[in-house]
Image 1 (cartoon, helix red, strand yellow):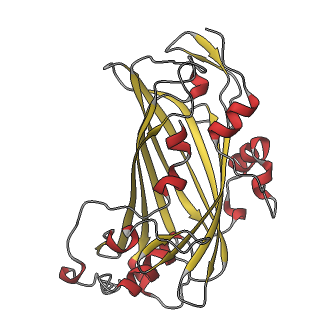
Image 2 (cartoon, one colour; image 1 turned 120 degrees about the vertical axis):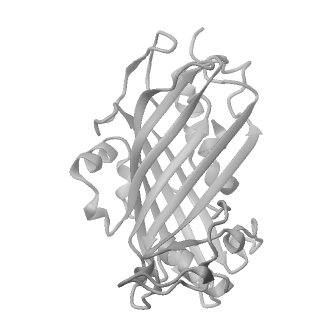
Length: 306
């Protein structure tokens, strides 16, 4: 699962390309809405992207989304397997040279479908094993953005030109963009050492994050951070804690959520869940060591017995 958990380090934080839509210049203003933005201008596109994604001003931005992981054995039918909720903290700051730099922390936890309470033990009906879901954290990740795309703040080297090249779609009073990421990387869990945790030598993951906002908010100079709805989907193989080994199959992660106006808008049930498993996310400085699922899992757990 290294590829999935490292999706931001490997590119998932980058605003990846989505399928091209109607050119912005061909759209008219909607009744009571705003005229389409000229997102062909790199500076205006960066401003729209940052206003939707985080903020044009120094801010702490929170994303919360929750959903379901569906699973299928082999070519069999897809069925709901488990619920998952994620809380992301992004601290963003504009720089004097027109760039934006960001630090991110994240935590996810597993729960029953339709229930926000963390699930610490369950029966995996796909293999008949009693398993312990592993609630994981990620970060800190550091990334910068300018008109050429995301870059490494430590070196100034750009990761790609995907912010510049990714289309921003507009229709009526709606504006949205996608961050798509495809990974094929070595699996941190090798079959010889982790025979039940590893599904094979490589991680192959496709993840897709779409951000939706109102065009009238993004076009308004007085709005520095636009309200934003969010949808996340990923196609992947088994989580290591499921102990599926090399069993053929697949999973689909689908979740929906919001860029919260503030952390106080996090529902009480979700806040209780995150406080139970990731209380450090709410501290001024959550942690300094870099963390992701492979690092923490391999430190805290031993390979399961076959």
